[in-house]
Length: 344
Image 1 (spheres, rainbow, N blue to C red):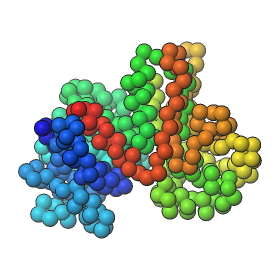
Image 2: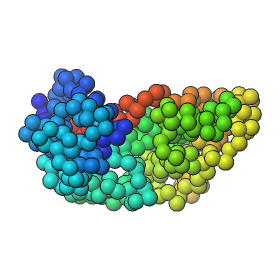
Image 3: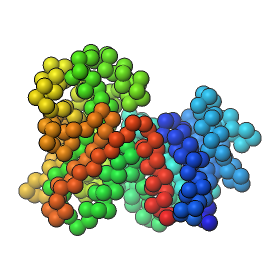
Image 4: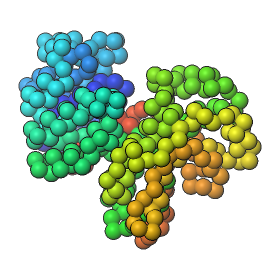
């Protein structure tokens, strides 16, 4: 039995659900893979807890966060004002699970600094946080390689859908002529609500009630989230070194309900489409925009809580993958998938 010591930064929706998964799946992982995944440290915005001897009880972490408390309130080993940076810099861990908010406006912090520190200290890093990959993709990969550790980020694109794994692993040797993805769930949900006759306020309120839209929603509704995911896909799968300014971006905020309803009457469905098209020189034009998709398009029948990706290749044909994600559990589970891919 190999013990793998984990440190988790970020105990929001994904971090809490990962803790529950670690609790629920512990025996299965021990029996199937011979791995004992032990959470020895965790941090949120108010403090941290660290116990390298006994580990933290993931279920107790979930209970604390569900009650509105901080991980700093964890009995005996919790510390207030002991932030993620200090935990990552001192913890004797094998893997950093970095699940803090994206926070591109603040330079993807604290996630970016935590990842840099962990890689320099010889820890593998697993993250669903798009921000650090969008801002420093090449730097972080070079840093990981120089310290002989792995950087995994399957959860940064399309929730629990293994879009990156398919592109990086299963399309080796191919040239991708076109990549099309619907990597953002909430925009499709809102557009379908509008097409059904709800007002903008009603549609966004419903999306918040369902947990698919947070805050003012601008990150999703203005296309930033989809653009960030396309940047990661371009770097990781297409080999294109690009950042957000390399994507032509149009969100859904200027769409009128009449256009959405007319498309629905034609049997079409609007989705915020992230697209990469290969040109004659071998480069790619990257764009994000709301597009009406017909029912015979591979992504034209996506439901309100579904996402998908289409790879058109020269030697493997056209590959389509779709995920139905009614909750955030699949997105959180990507961190477990990445850990298992490193060790199992």
